[in-house]
Image (tube, rainbow, N blue to C red; front, side):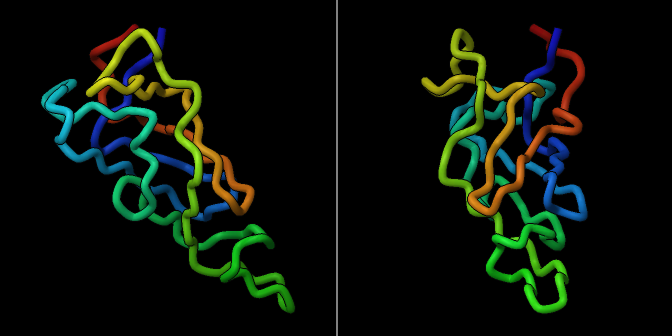
Length: 122
């Protein structure tokens, strides 16, 4: 059993040093626990996915290569979350689940640490 992801979910990145949160705009008008439910397309940097503090990836443009010092996180997310729940659509897009992950262009893998709700399970 898993949970669907909604507004306020806590995210972690393998290259980030701090957790982040997921912001889901109420455009699809589908809620879980009175919070907007997320889809695999809620992958927009700064709109949906906030920065993770500092980034330890040497591929990140803010990483200081001379000293190996992490720089500010600049999430760059060119692809949707995978896998979604294709048989549960939210605004004609697959729902996002706690098992989904998101790849950053700089090598980080973003995962859901807390889905934002614990009541609705599939």
